[in-house]
Image (cartoon, rainbow, N blue to C red):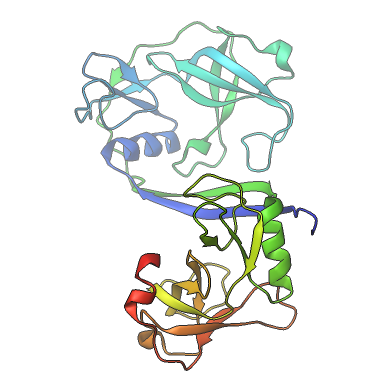
Length: 314
């Protein structure tokens, strides 16, 4: 029995969204050192603004300017900031109700230590030196010893060169431990074998194994070698090139029902023009030297499988 594996993994992608009139005005306002909220049906001023009333679900667009000062409503100390967080040194996460607003904005508070932070303390925005129309235009909040300033004032939301879209990088760093069943599966792959586990109740063989039957909910321990050949059940043609992936488009990703398995896995199809891949195509794995998993699957040259042989695995 191989040791359970563990490895650091990173999931990262750019999240792109277009902005409607409310969010566009809010982010463009931050670039111009102006904080805008939106007035809801009941008269409450919401900061950050939303496009639909949280009570009535009606569209709301009445923009209102609020102050750059406010009051901490709650907080939590962050002793070890992570990369890309607002401040590199320890800081407090705070919810701040800006003067003139009825809801709180989440951001960072620069403070020497947790003893310097309290609910009810007065703070003000520290603006970033360079502003682009993003929430990071607020560098952080800092302590402020003044009273409430100003009242909310109507704002038309008009700015020169408004921000109409944003790209936000999303990143998740974590350590993945696949557990007993998948560790055995990965160990077998490194030796160019493919193994699944059979359910003792329904007798289906699942690849990759999960350690339990997803249908019956019982533990699975009996290992079964499957494949290596299989049948394409469904597929898609990929036309968009992924960042950092050295692979020309178009190419085909397919669900493949390996011989002896009762669950299709997905893999790339090669060795055949993309427009000739079809349901029922018989394929086999291609291993690269030193590879720990098949690089892709290619046609075996066998006749296509009959639809009835794989229809339950679509």
